[in-house]
Length: 117
Length: 117
Image (cartoon, rainbow over all chains, first blue to last red; front, side, top):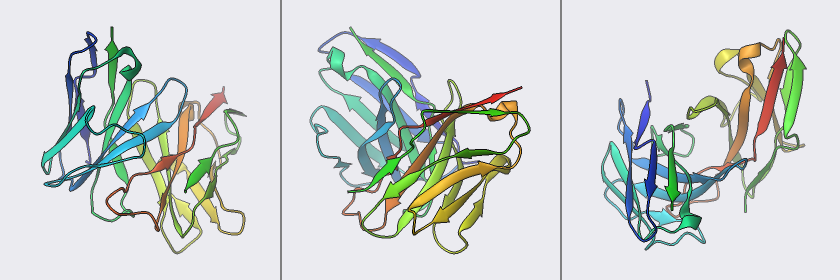
C-alpha cells in the first residue's frame, strides 16, 4: 500500500516552454503533498507544501510564479514549470502524506527528470 | 532553522557485520525523525520513524534506530548487513515548531551504504 506515482518519469523541453508534472497517490487519499527538488549527488530540497483545496506554501527562494502547484483533489497534485530555462533542469520528486499531522511518514514518487534545452 | 547532518558520504561494511549510519540533527523544538532509503532508479522508501516514546525504534528490513536527545542523534543500525542493503540512505527531520502551512521534511545529504560480499 501507500503508492505514489509520477508522470512523466522524464521529459525534455525547449527553453521558454512550460512542463506539467503529475503526482498521484494511488491507494490512499492525501490531504497534503510535497514537492522536492534533487540535484545530482545532493539531497532533496523542499520546494513547497501542497494542501488539497488551498494554495501551496512555498519555501523561501522558490518562485511561486515559475513553479505553479495545484492540488485539486485528494489524490492528485501537479507541478507546472513555466517558461522553463536550462537552470530548471533537475530531478523533481513528489511525496504524499497519509495524515494531516507531521508525525505521519511521507511516501515518495519515483521522480521526474526534467531536461531543458 | 532545522538541519540534519550525515557526516559520512559512504560507509563500507562486510556482509554479515553490523552496520551503523550516522545522523545528527538540530531543531528548535522536539523533532520527528525519519530514515528513508533510495535504491537506483526508484523512489525513496520509508524505513522507520521516531515520534515519541521508546528511544529504540524498529523498522523495515531489520533496521532500527536509536534516538538520543542529549547527543541530538538518530543513528541507523542493523545487526547483520546484507548485500541487498547497499543503497543511499537519508535521514530527515520535521521540527514540531515549524508550521504555518509549510510542513515538509529537511533531509541530510545522504550516505551511500556499500555492503561487500
